[in-house]
Image 1 (spheres, rainbow, N blue to C red):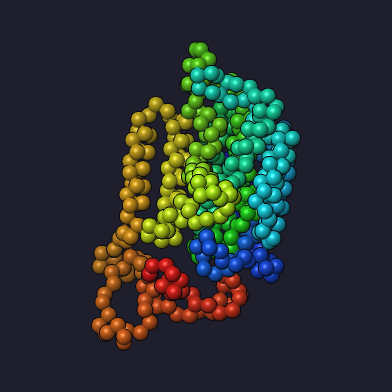
Image 2 (cartoon, helix red, strand yellow):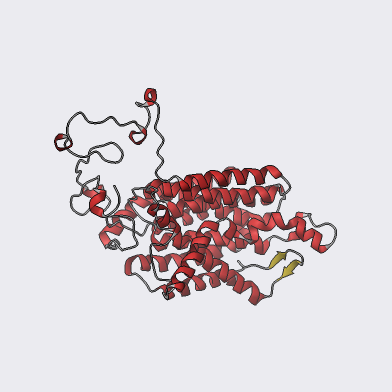
Length: 439
């Protein structure tokens, strides 16, 4: 665990330190698209954050290759090289798309080729445990098609959910944390060395997301772009494929009785392995609804719109930060609920806990404008947004500048070289009424 934590910290540090120079590089090269109709940010923001994340990936793999307890992963398996090859290809296509806006079909083809590159180097699905049937061995063609489909779906699910500041990085980090705990349990608890590559991949993925999040939280100073969203989606899919394709179900020693009984007993264990879609169920649901919605309207499934789940949260009254936290909540509930069920499938407390937390989540969804107020004795220690406001003693015409939503005056602050766009002067606190959104 110490080596995994060291790899995670190095990856996070490299990603965090490189994001600032990458931001300046994106501004210098003009990788700052204009505001589109579906965007929720109001100022052009540099992209290409995936460059820093890719170098964080390279740093994490390099450090792990020189650690005593992790170097065997590179000696006994070709999966790290397969991951790096596919990641480099998808990252390069993402960088070109962030700069030149490539066609959606070109990106889809690049995603399939990246998955094919990993399959050619041994990172593929070999068998599946199916309820009522047993463990089914896949032919090379079946394994290839299933692997490519899983990679493409995961990449596009992460790409679709990348619509709010910090949303995609945070949700993938939550999914990677749950997946890391499960893979580490297989590797350490069952002494399955074949689970070590997936454990390493998820540790590096957590470091990439944690290193990038401080720059990407609202208000974001840089976006990861397709170079980052497609990259982390591919790594998440590769982690699931690594365990599913390499771990022999027999070594878990849970198969007893008939084949059907054994498969039923083993099903909770394989849920996070065979169905990584349950870990990123929210992005997958968003992807499915987007395809249905656009096809129903006669549009291309790749046509962009403002109908995603995070857009709906903003429309019903949630703030930007609260919408992101709600999406975090549901992702963590599904990911860690699935993880807990895979460990103790017979515990009723897990089911009751998931039901109770789901009820809390539904209450949060139905109360978009609820803002708790701190008691008067705690006014001086809580953030301004939770303080009780006192009416101004003067008339509205003589009150001066209108206070902002967080209790501060809108004081124009020049952007300078360290602003969001580094282009001209701007006001730090924009007037929402002028932007066409409710105040």
